[in-house]
Image (cartoon, rainbow, N blue to C red; front, side, top):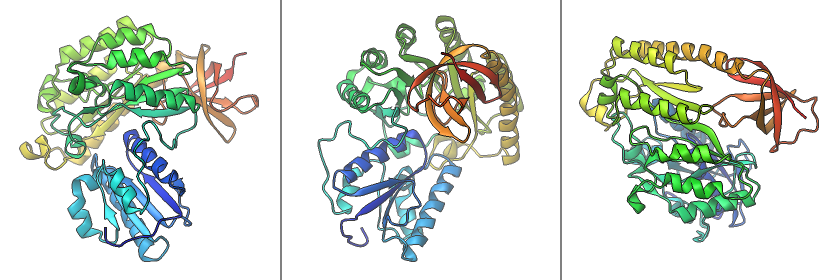
Length: 438
């Protein structure tokens, strides 16, 4: 640490990146809060003289956002607006030496797993026995629950293992305890997150334990929705499908990043599966749970992607008709397999064009899928009120990334965090409109 600081009175935590980062920030915030220090999150509150930035280092855009945020607060420190600036997370895990050299006006840089060291740098006490204790920053009725860290996969393009290390599962008992604590504090929906849910348990139980974990979570009284994010398609534990089907409080929703469909690209990307296996898995989902909503992400512009590969991907999207779809363009991340072995030879213009073309296809699909919901009734949880509308979600939609259901504020009896039966009256490409069905 560059300078010794006195115990702060107020700390501002700024979180960038994914929901896994958000959970890390929430754990850190609870540690600070229990030392009698006021905390704010993602705030421009200049009364907070100590700032901690939790960075993302996933792709170029995320890294640029993180660097710019550090520069902004470093300037604020230089101008005397804040006194102390700390940086943590994936970016500083991977580029600590470079950051220290380029942006020296930071008290200290930390990695992704250095909460104890951050606490000690603030001159406050680290609390050891805080399993399941977090300062929840999401609305009171839902929370993310991280069941593992790191990743053992060897995808050619991904730098996550370089930043987060190998896969480390949390014990089932710890996860259940944390989930029970969340529910006791009013959480009704838990979103299970990890870099790879499909690998859960292999490191400590020598077999996948995702299905067993879901069985136990489903029995927690008061937990109305359980949602799965980021299951890996290769070696997917198919017994999970039956567990989803069995329990009403496990959402008919799955987030399974496929990245591509052509065998050529799946091999280059080192995804560990084939087109045939991918199609068979999607068929199993839909045959056994016809109402399931499948969310996926695709990656275009990876070295080796030919026009034929892209045409195959387009056909796949058109025929599969995903409920939710996101598309990324390839970012050449240092020290990854692709960075070392391939030339990033597809122009950015082509990458962006391919992304836009896929999203246009998906836009039409999304509209058609949404229109099928009109005049049907769905269980909806209300997340917030904004302007003339309450905003909610069905079990087929995850916060921040998926459709929302908009209900006119004329229904004043509506309460945030409660469930309602809602009749859908109108559908657009990415939103639904509805009325309370009493």
